[in-house]
Length: 202
Image (tube, rainbow, N blue to C red; front, side, top):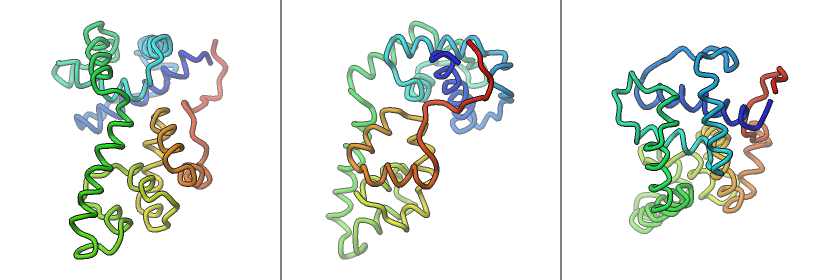
């Protein structure tokens, strides 16, 4: 499997996952190699490789720039020059999205800590375990700074899934909370950019 195909496989999964999670469209994805959009996904992978772009982040963000009725969005739309340019401009303006997410969540968390400890919550871990707060799973386990069994039980697997799809997110958590990153892999397996399909292609 070539690197472009590996990244194409990541784009393949991200496309169908996003169509379901964002639009509640359960499209039939089938197998990567026999998917009717196979060549398009490989093109996306090659484009991200040549541009040094995180393919998962691109697929997640670019879908918001396509501007079509959701049912008509296809992988070809992710290769449109205007969509790519819009993503690059947003990335240029906001910098690394993972770092921005970390900083904004940390700012919110600090505010909540100041407002609620000890009057409502006894500690930061109790806040991080509050399901009504809109923190992503990876932030909940990483911000604790150490392995917290309660947080791992409730959010560990979801955090692993989020991080497994995003190379830059893995790098961020590994830097901010290395113990957490190591423990996630011990429990749910090593992170990887793609899932080997068993067959040898290219």
